[in-house]
Amino acid sequence: MMEELKDEAIIEKVGGRFKLSTLIQKRMVALNAGSRPLVDIQAENKMVIVLEEIKQDKIYLDMSREVKITGDLEGTGQILDDLGAGEL
Image (cartoon, rainbow, N blue to C red; front, side, top):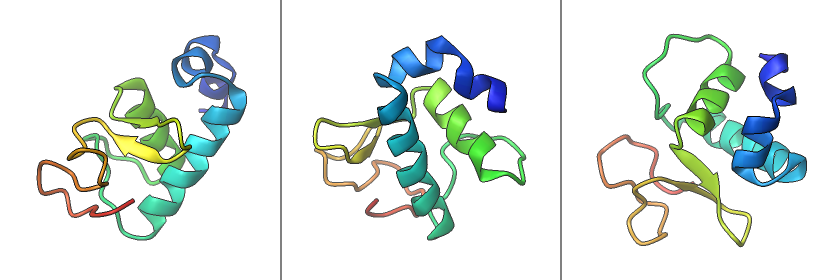
């Protein structure tokens, strides 16, 4: 897992180390608050879930540094399918 954080591909995908850490932190807060994972993996560690969501292009950090989910309903934080995550 920690090796993935050092991988330049995931760092470049997000736009830099600072953006990666911000995205991870914000998504971890959402998962801890009850948001459902956007990937279908069995993992006890939420960091593994967040990294997989990033790798599968399920989440990204928008220009205002807010976490957005691919398929967001016009940037409202409401997900198009019923995942129960609601507003991030």
